[in-house]
Image (cartoon, rainbow, N blue to C red; front, side, top):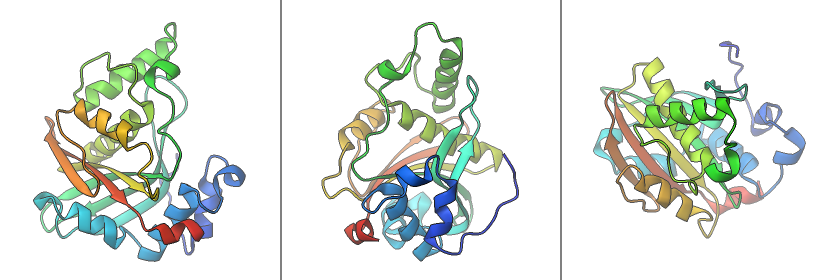
Length: 224
């Protein structure tokens, strides 16, 4: 993956970065809604900042860089974790790594039971790695969603690379009914924390502080 970044001047510039620019770039879907929302804000949207600020450690956040469709390499296969947006931000005193997953009605991908093939050494290597990064017991519950594991780990991996003190998994949901929130709740239970819409839950890991936030996006972006 190149470390040379090309600026986005409008939401349409995000489209060619998608895994499937035709299928995923549709009105009412998360990729398009997220692009319009974040490009308009030129960084972390005000609604997300307001929720994150409910955690004292994440107050007064300033966006340093925000990278659409940011790929984070993982062991055990060729496919990286492709973050809808990855943000390097700062508070007045510390750096913060934020992995953003945009949602409307799409699920968090397959469950681990659906994703994992018992005879796949590569998948076992990857899952053990993800659990190690997140300091979770292996094997994790079979009904947990795989996407949440590698997206949360992305925030941690990039935090370690940039020597950030905080890693954030941010679910930016434009679903009026908070579709798939139950899967997010179950995932956070693995960390011993409780999930609430428009709130931050936190847990200390060995090298940093991990935060989780589910933010309701503005429905108007579904028509963008």
